[in-house]
Each structure stands twice: as C-alpha cells, then as structure tokens.
Image (tube, rainbow, N blue to C red):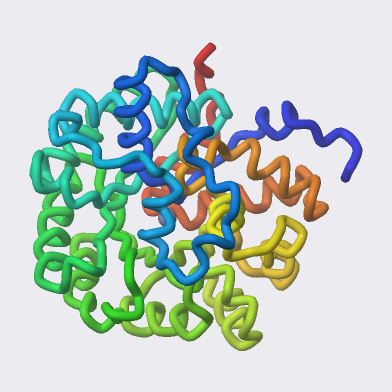
Length: 337
Ligand SMILES: [Zn+2]
C-alpha cells in the first residue's frame, strides 16, 4: 500500500456517494429501538455466503437482514425523516459531502404514500444539511416485480416531486422475469422531468443486461455493473460514453458474487478507464461506510489517495444534482462530533 494511506487520511478526503438505500436502515433502526441496542448489525451478517447461491438479490438481502417483518407502525413521517437524517449524519462524520439516497420500499410507499415518503426524507435531508452542510438528493427505486403499471405510476409521482429533492430514478429487482422493456415508459416519464436514470444491472446478471438497460432505458449510470468487465466491447463503450458504475464492493462480497476483495473487478475497470465510483449500498446492514470501502480498496487493490480523488471526481460528474455535488465538495462541511 502507498505510504501515508491510513483510515484517517481516507476519512479526511472530501467524498461523494451515489448508491445507498434507505430501507435497510429503517429496518435496523426498528430493531435497535425494539431491543434498546445501539447497533444490531452483527447477528444479521451472513457468515456463509455460499448458502445463498441461487437466490435472487432480494431474497439474499432479506436473509442478510434476517430481521423479520418491520411493523407498519414503524413507517411514520418522523421515523423516516430521522433515518434519512441519521444516514446523512453518519456520512458527514466520514466527510462524505454529497449523498444520493434511494428509496423504493413497497410498504413505505403504501403506508405514507410516495409523496409522503419523499417529503419525510426531504425533512431529514434538510436537517442534516442545516447541521452539517452535507448536500443530498433522493433517487426513487422502482421494484421490477411490481410491474410496469405500478412503475409508471410511481415514476409520475416522483417526477412531480422535484420540489422535495428527487433527482433520479432507479430500477431494481428481478431482472429475469421483469425485463427492461417493461420499464421504458417509466424511464421516459422521469427523463422528461429532468431526472437522471440509473439501473441495477451487471450484478447478478452478466454484461448483456448492462447493454440492454443502456439501449432500452437510457441509463447514464449503472447500479453495480461490475460484470461489464466480462465484455471488452462494453468496457470500451462505458469508457467512451463516460457512463459511471456505482460499485459497492462489500455488498458484492457479502452476497457471494465476488470471491474476495482481490478478485473484485473494480481495479480492472478503473485501469481500463471506466468511470468507477465506490459506494456502501446498505451501510448499516453491511456494517460498512465509504471510508471503510475506500480504505480497503487501497489496501487490497493498491489504489492511492490520488486514485480515490479521481473516483470522487467521477462521482461528482455523474451526480444527478451535479451543481449541488460540486458546491458541496468545494466547501468544508461541519463534521458531527
Ligand atoms: Zn443497491
């Protein structure tokens, strides 16, 4: 490892994060409240990822967070605002100055309404920005299994909620049974409203899924996408078209998709000139954060602090609210003590 790289040096770097989900934090917050414990991630981590081979992402995540069902009463405006605030407070403590938070949970949307959820998140975000200067935006995740009509409906509402800081649309879930063609309309609605498009692909499925979402859905960013490395033509395309990949190494490892840090294609993709960014995905559940991800990337994959700065620049340039990301990275934030 390059001399001078310490966890503290990585923490001190101003950072931006594009791929982090709210729902898993909400679930763990409920558990922590119920059991009066400050952190409950440990018992929910997978000790043997091989056990879950053959499961789709959602099933694996459910097993990862063997938390049982979160009662409906947890979905209140106040709890959602608090979880969004805490997510950003944790990020600010790591000197992450711009964060895009994803939300797409069926029950949250059903119980509070899509706009209700987005307003609660906006309240938490505003509080975090006022206290720590951390800038953020919300990305609405469409879950494929709920079908194209539901997706188009949610996309319409998301498009009308730009006032609550919605900056983008994400498509996630079962790729095999719900192909991208079903979500063309939803993505069009979002694009017409000026929202960015990112899609989970190239994670459980191979490079063909990445090609499809670029062509059919017009994604300008890819959620995960690390399996693009298997197709040299795709690697060249991503580089030429400056399409950013939202890489979440610990998530990939815990889900058993990559054998070890050293085998992670992050290094090969970066060396090939692809705009890779590093992200934490489900930080509470995976017990990680952006500092830990970046520091381990330096230790295991030989990245330098300059490489991390380059990846942060990629993240800022790929941010769906680039103006906010640029502004946030330019000024020091007030770090929580
Ligand atoms: Zn994700």
